[in-house]
Length: 196
Ligand SMILES: *[C@@H]1O[C@H](CO)[C@@H](O)[C@H](O)[C@H]1NC(C)=O
Ligand SMILES: *[C@@H]1O[C@H](CO)[C@@H](O)[C@H](O)[C@H]1NC(C)=O
Ligand SMILES: *[C@@H]1O[C@H](CO)[C@@H](O)[C@H](O)[C@H]1NC(C)=O
Image (cartoon, rainbow, N blue to C red):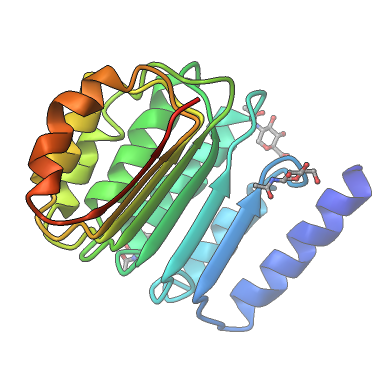
């Protein structure tokens, strides 16, 4: 496994140092462990994340929080033009600094249009991550939430005036959302509420 990490990190470094600018990044931490040398390279090519439009993060439960948080903070600073953000394998039990870094990424966006969250083991607490979507209420058009237990944070979605598509799949505790759904209906939106 460590040789795979090594090759991925070498490729990552090569891309950064060649002066590339990314449009899409899909990081699955099941297959990847960051080498902090990458941070040094990123410091030398600040444009690398500057045009990122599509970011997917798969954050496994036994993640190496410290190094991942550093990378997420760099993304929050440098990638402010993300259109579509996908968070996979979300756990309520991450270290607080990881939740905080995710909030920073959401809040630093100029125009987030699509947001997807896939829970790992039915998270019940979102530590402000869903509430942070308030900052994107004008731009958000599409939200997909899968395998989560809805919390009061989900009510923020009713403030998203331009939301066209809301997909809630295999989620628990929909009562909280039902209380808000009547508000969503006003916008004549597609509500794909397949219950568990
Ligand atoms: C991440 O990688 C693992 C192992 O290859 C795979 O099982 C999992 O489905 C991947 N996650 C995503 C979101 O692609
Ligand atoms: C961060 O990555 C470095 C290099 O792989 C490693 O030595 C260090 O232990 C990692 N940090 C944590 C908290 O695991
Ligand atoms: C990009 O991130 C680096 C490291 O965090 C920071 O020093 C730099 O100012 C950022 N660049 C921009 C354009 O935000």
